[in-house]
Image (tube, rainbow, N blue to C red; front, top):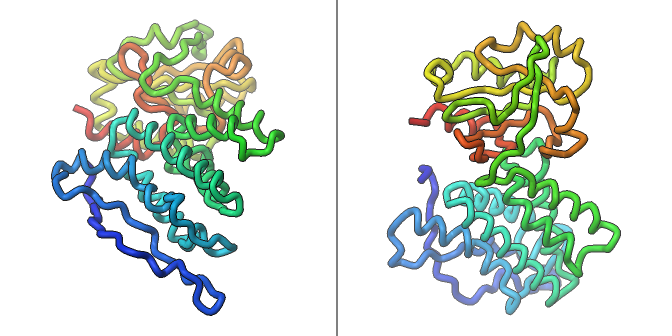
Length: 316
């Protein structure tokens, strides 16, 4: 359980802050969920918060105003902060519970849209979800969490028909190489043209690192991994392997960058371009990092580098 999470026990009574006063709607605070008093285990409380975090805000029996500033009576900035807080909670619960919580949120905002189509909750929460969970630059990005939400968008009666194919494609891409499934195998070549396969790598864990020569963010990751004594020990004892893979076509530029890549890594390129053309992986931006176990089961997918580095430094 991460430190710093405060479980707010709030007794909710009648709310007056969303009522009209002199033709002006006063904003209400984001309604905090109440954790049952008998729930003393922190992990159990986190699971409860993940699932029921949005219930009071999405209660269709009590609707509040929406305008350019307010979303169901709550200021947009405060709502966005609440959304970020919820994402932090999702990181504290089992993967399946987090996915279920996202599904539940989509169901509840859909019910709100069905109750009152003038509400902006569906549009605003959908926008925040795409921004935080699917933008390749988001430190919270998580395709597995986004997948049930975008699948819902692709089938929703509240989404214009012309936008559904895009959402359907995103849902299909998010379904690739999900956490808990076996990663797609592929063949790669090293600088001498020798052929290897992902599944041929023998190590307790494999970092799959999609990178490009000249990529500043890639170089930062290379330097951090290369300077970590913990990573060096894991590479030496065979408990970790790093596969640094190039999936584009400028091999001359890739070869020039070879001195930058550590010799202790597998450094290769995709000779048949199957990773992109056959869409084996949803590589939307470079760099992209995956963590696999010995059996090539996905443990982390397109993970923000900070999360991977935290795992590396805390791994036993």
